[in-house]
Length: 211
Image (cartoon, rainbow, N blue to C red; front, side):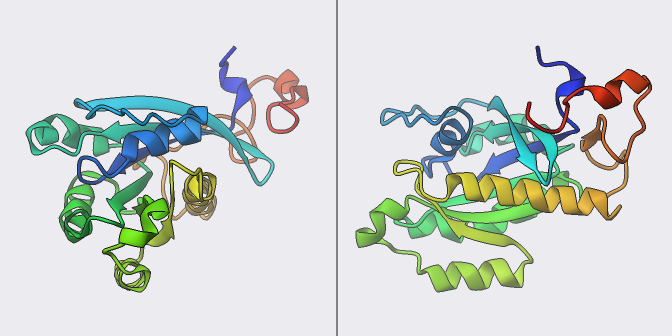
């Protein structure tokens, strides 16, 4: 169980953004298909994994949920190191959480690999009736900063799979194109076309398909 042969890559992805925007529920919805209405504030960092298929390869996503509160900032900054992807989350019904996106982005780039894939995520799209962040404004901000963009609802499970999978696919594209070099990020190639298996028997194991 959980042997290296079960997947081709390990990608570390961090969730960042203000406290209360729904990062923990995005994580639990993606990794366990669960939603907690009484979600408590994250203390420090929480961690979960999920294995997904991307273009016939098996990718293990290590997803780190970072605390949004200021008093935990010193603890969490170290966790940016080695991340190859990030979801920068805000609450579409709370404009202040969107206004801080630029600060979060700067903090991320200060600590993470320069080639990191970042998606701006407007969460709580189920609260559209009290929306305070226009979709077009967020799209423009994302485009200006070279970010991916989507709106999600962890409550209704809207676009959650798409958000994470698109980030993982974009990371894989960068790794495949050698834009990201080994050693600069925690994108560990374990098997597949980029690393010849040490044991010829490994080639016959169903590591990439029909796992």
